[in-house]
Image (cartoon, rainbow over all chains, first blue to last red; front, side, top):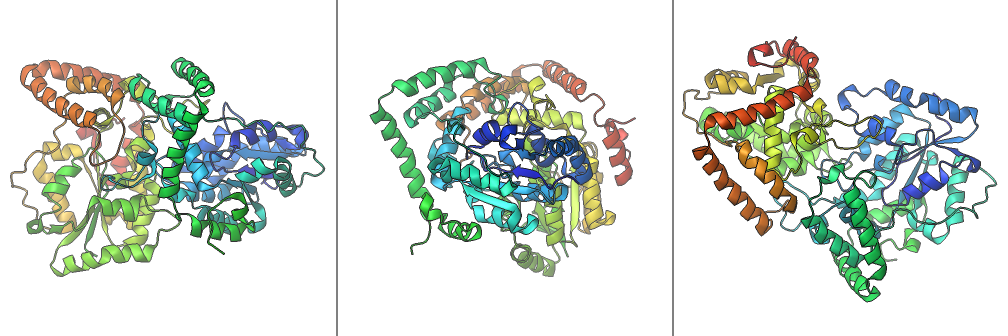
Length: 318
Length: 307
């Protein structure tokens, strides 16, 4: 199987995956090749590894779906990339946490692939995910989204925080693919030092002597500011949108208009108001998740040999 | 091991079984756990933290206690057959998980002809929070634009996959599959089969009360539009809006049933079922044929799509 030169980027969501997919992984001059790009991130990965019927999943059939792309990548002497951030999880979906199951499938199909996992400090991740959720039509407050208070028997909050205990998934990938085959980077490194971040990815897949100076660091999928989100949430309650799951930026003119108006508001509302709304959300997240991820972050730090405290992650006191 | 695991499917009389059969000690059953236990220990547990021994221990104590009293313990939760909103997601793994925990247990699976099933699920979803029409609800994923969730994934109701998997894990004799239609047409036979399978003594002649009577589509049609305004909160005390809305439609449904002629209600429902029939076309023929074969029952007698 031609998977020695395959890099699989599994997310997490909200870690600038779109920037990597659009700006880096499809750039052949950089040494990368993305043969499976669809409208959005590599949607073939969703079909083959996430929503595939478990009863009929076959590693051979799944491999066949990728074979041509892999051959093409080999012919071009490029690092072929399969990038889909949901391969790690969709922590906004109550139906299940598929990270483990998907890891097994990926390993069955591409046992020699290299794996890239990008993590993000959890409070910042939750804040970003909340913005994304509201942008897609969500109606819950941050409290309703993550808190277990008053949850009906047997149900869980929409955003399941245990998905953000990264050490479980990282450790699992280490065991399946081997420690040297898995690169874990904090999203904060990209913000701090884009060149070092990209250099680490390139080194990992054997691409050398690349210059990253001309690569734009423009972030994609930038969220609205907090006060704008609060208005968006109110609108979501009262405008007759179709059910959320059918909405995407490309197919709903109503959303496109609303988003344009909100963007305008985003730029005109007083910063003081935005900051006040932001600190309300952040304060709740801070309070609710206090010490929740300390142990996991400690384990993650040790697993990946990076001091995550340097990037603002909650860790045990020295 | 005296354990019966009833995995659903959804909309196949699960509430009736749970409320009127599986908690009746005089029939020989006991259900010592609650729904929250199933969700926390089995359904939504972090897969990396799932511990077979600890989980088994949690259930085993009560199973053994019941066995001493000659009772069959029952785990009954229709969500074990997969998530209704995500195409049955997780049902394969759940079967493996249940087998790893209780390899000696007996499994009860109740199926329903897909046309009625989809109609019932759609009405159930309207009664919750769904806002889309039947055509959109049944629209399947377009391959050029894959997505995580069609509203309803047809594959979920290809019963032979799940039945076959359970039979191969637990053994064919340990898995009882019954059509929901048998419960409607011949309750005595349906209950006798469960009784024989579990070696219990269900009083099949007893007068059981009706549970979960479904709403009329005429009421739900209007609820669909008010659902747009309903916040989706999975909480005990959800919004005032939801309470008022649900209460209003409960009463509206009573008015509809008491004033609108049954023939008209049926006409509308039949029209909707025609749309569903057109959508599913022959989708389930092959699966139903296989299901018929593996459960040794002619499902065409119950109007399942067959050759």
